[in-house]
Image (cartoon, rainbow, N blue to C red; front, side):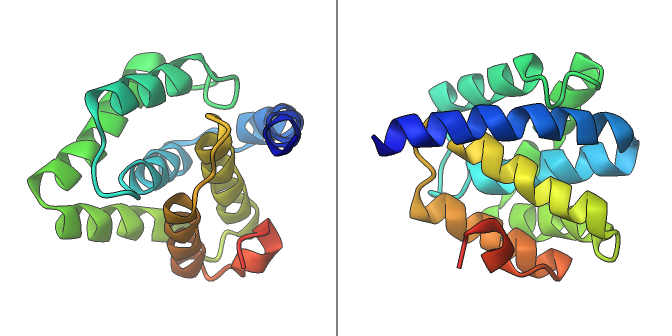
Length: 151
């Protein structure tokens, strides 16, 4: 029951987010989204090969990010992942710094959080470690996690 609700909510949100992303198409927003998704991907401490493949497939094929060139998305995602692979603390700090560039740009910042939530929920399991990662993104952006049902 909860899984069906989550999938339905994901589809509903994806449609409206696609329209909003199209309006905000720019390099800084894309980099912030990629950095945010990497923070969420590493939420449980590691990203397996299967998780990378699944997440990259999602990014390549998802309508939310289809407004961007696939190679640019993949290269950007890999750039942020390599920072985590070098050192988790450095990777997280640098990714959150990139996310933080949207602070004060409320429409973009809120959309970034919603995209991270949608990507986290794509597999039907938005677990506590992923929610904690999205809460840290909210903190970096000066947004209230309760606005995204993350309190």
